[in-house]
Length: 96
Image (cartoon, rainbow, N blue to C red; front, side, top):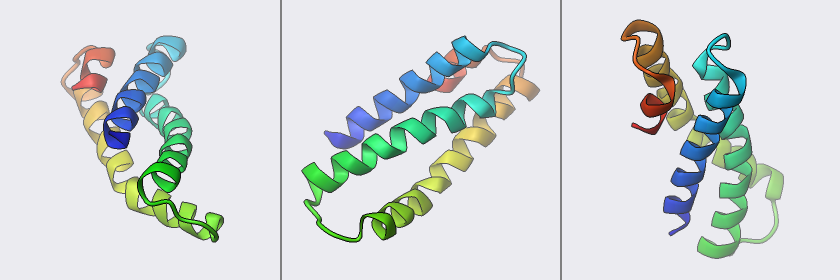
């Protein structure tokens, strides 16, 4: 359930940032801003609801970000490809 919430939230934040920043800003910026918000929320939800871990917050958060950075890089690459190369609309491409 936490993963579903986080995925939906990440898509929503990306679409929101795309709408706020407009076409002048590369879509990768929207992905990074959405990630910066959603990774913190995801970490807290996973830590409290899924794994119920205590202690070593900074170390655990650093590892969590490192593991999730692969998805961030993939999202940046695919959205940039869809918008810049294929000239698809940014918001639907972000959701797909």
